[in-house]
Length: 200
Image (tube, rainbow, N blue to C red):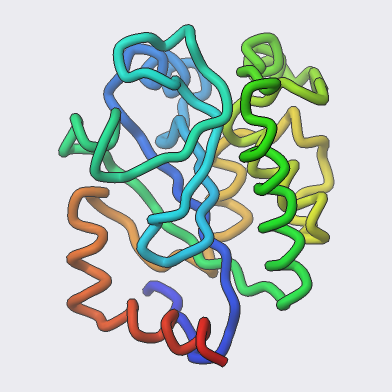
């Protein structure tokens, strides 16, 4: 049973996804977990969403901080992406701090790179920190930590996508095909609830 978004409550959103790219398949093979990617969004429709991933669809080695869109890029090309979405209730102060942290990444996106070494470290339980290098789940965990949203006791460089699922099960609002997600929102009138939260 999915959790319900409450009127008047502020949320941030976590998207866990499973694409069919070679790196994603390799990650799932090594971790034996269903999800290979983590994204952080500020709205229920996932229109303002960020992560660390490839910058160009056909070049997995040119990666860093990116704006993501579920209808374009890797997500748009693969209509069979499976996902889970989680709505984390936060205070107005926590929400403001998340936006501030994200703004820093947005304004300085060119200095950030993908933490390939850290990703390998996460597979073997070794934390590899860097001020300018992140992998997807490390980035999301870092932003949350810096915003006062403490989900995990272990270091951000040890957080894998499935850790979010384990921690956030009670906040899951959707599981299924990513291409059907916005249709699901419309059918359940979930867009209007968030619009209400924005207005108060």
